[in-house]
Each structure stands twice: as structure tokens, then as C-alpha cells.
Length: 329
Image 1 (tube, rainbow, N blue to C red):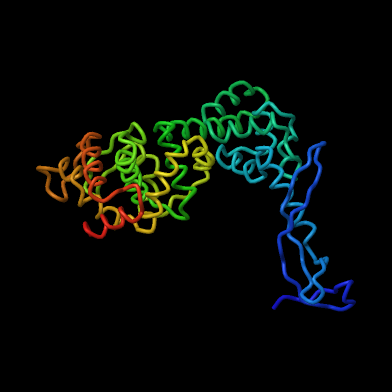
Image 2 (tube, rainbow, N blue to C red; image 1 turned 60 degrees about the vertical axis):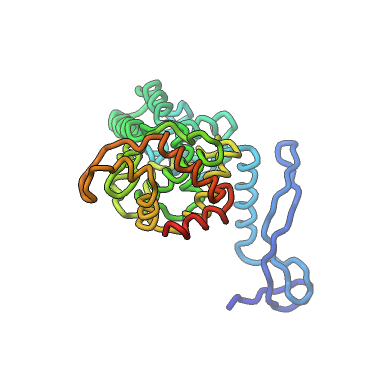
């Protein structure tokens, strides 16, 4: 049970409820509207002071101010250190900052827009980080440089897919709580098909292959193969965060429609669904069920199948897709 707190209006200890309240605050001459948490006395309805609430409000204002201004969070800075396996002081120097700059950011100091953009670029682009490490190599120890550079090079090699594919994967990660490699492969294929049914064109340029367990994008498989059938969770994949912001509204709607319908299924069910579809069957023609194949599932076959099924079921709506699923399953 929640402890009672002394209410200065009621002059006794009372129960309280937490609510959100909008407050206007001026920061550097600009007025912002922040939503903060307040405690309301259940008896008199007045605001109360409870332990820890001021710290909570400070954190809420800080997070919202950073969001307003597009400035990185403390968590973003921590992710950057994890992604490139580098300490706070060498990271500061590698990015061209003063030696203690990152340490200050970790304690809560808000970065300037300029420095925030540098951190964002390093977090989203291994190529950018490689450039900064090369420029500032002499400023950091050989050990720190080698460790960070190896991490950056591995990350650059790991992400061999197109920017559009990265954005789609980012959207999937952002919208679903848990994604396994098997789920991811099938969702990408279904999104590609949905794009054909709605727009008549592919979502991304990559081709998939007709593997034993359904359609697979080989480059994506290599990125996540170490997770096998487990949920994807790796500090390196922080690079995905925010990538989906560059998707068009139409692309986001297509992806979200697929995730709303298919995102509730596990990888094995999604595999079964793709096994019922003509494009995979055509590419697997002549292969036994357990024989490996690298045959391409052509974009033309995906396009033809989805345009045909769209005409029959209307894939622009959840209702139409669910009717289709009901029939094939």
C-alpha cells in the first residue's frame, strides 16, 4: 500500500494520487510546455510534496526539452560508448571534444546542438565514427583507438544492406517488443509484398531467396545469425534507433499495417504463411522440402501474387488481410 504523506492544507497525513500537469517554463529565452507529474491530495484536491517528486520532475523536463530541441539523451551517450566499446574520456577526444565533455553529459549537462549532432552521427553511422577516430587518433591511447576502430569496422561490415532496408528494420524494432531473426525475415518479405499490393512497387531493393524455412534476405541473415531463434538484443543495434524517421508516411503506414496483423504471430507461424504463397513455391520448384536452395524469389513473382490477392481480398485494410489469412491457414 502507498504510504500516506502530510498534506499542509488538511494538516494531517492523507492518501494521494499522481497526475500529469502541463507547466510553462522558459529556457534560454524560449517558452516550452512540459508535462510533469504532481501529487494530488485525495481529500482536499490540492498539490502535495512527496519524496522523490522534484527529482522526477527534473528528469521529465530534461527529457522533454531534449526531445523538443532534438538533442541526444544520456542513454544515447551510454549507447555510443557501448556500441564502440570506448570509455568516456577517449570518446570525448575521438569526437573532437574536450576530454571531460562526455563525462559532463553523463552527469546531466545538456549538449549544444552542434555537439549533439556529432554524437547522433557517430551513433547512426560507423563510417562517420571511423572518420572521427582517424582524425583524432593521436589524441587517444593506442589501446582505446584499436578497440574502438575494430568495433567500428566490424559494425560497418555488419550493416551491408541498403539504407531503406535499415529504416524498415528500425521501424519493426520500434513497433514490436520482441523480434527473432526468423520473425524479422518473414515480416520483411510480407512488407515487400504489401508494398506491391498498395503501391505497385517494392519497399526496398534487396532480393530474397527461397530457403527451406521460407523467404530469407541473406544480408539480413548474416547480420542477425548469432541470435538463432532468440530475440534480437545487442548494443550494436542501437544504430537502428531513429532510422525509421526518414521513412515516408506512406511507407510507415504499410509497415505498421503488416505489423498490426502479422506482428502477433511467432516466426514458425509466419514461416507457414509464406510457405502457402506462390512466390516461394515457384522458387522452390524441383527441391525437396529439406534441401537447401539459394534460388531468388523474383520481385516480379512477389508483385504478381500480391496484386492478384489484393484484388481478391483488399490488402489495404486489416480486415482484408485477416480474411486472406483465415483462408490460407
